[in-house]
Image (cartoon, rainbow, N blue to C red; front, side, top):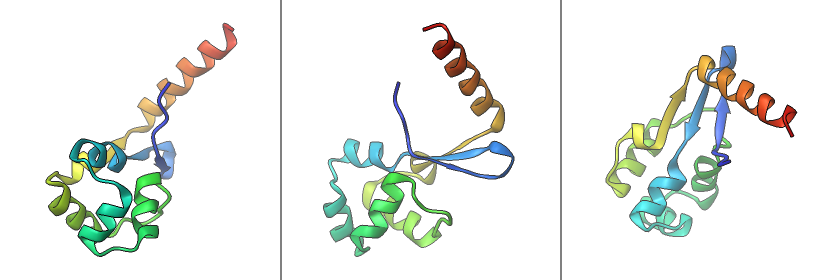
Length: 97
């Protein structure tokens, strides 16, 4: 099972951060993205791990410019219905072991 960085919003909906996948596809390390954008390594790390509570539009636009992608390549909205279904599947899988 693949675990992706997810930031939970209200009502159990979430935002999935996919920066890691985009960086891998484009051949970027966190250090290289930091150099190319001029952002601190800690800023890159926060988006990479999904450890941020507020998204900075300038940061996202620079990621898109440097990585040749769109915002939807980096962020994905996950409705609560999908999260609930994933939890149910995980619960069934765990209980059947």
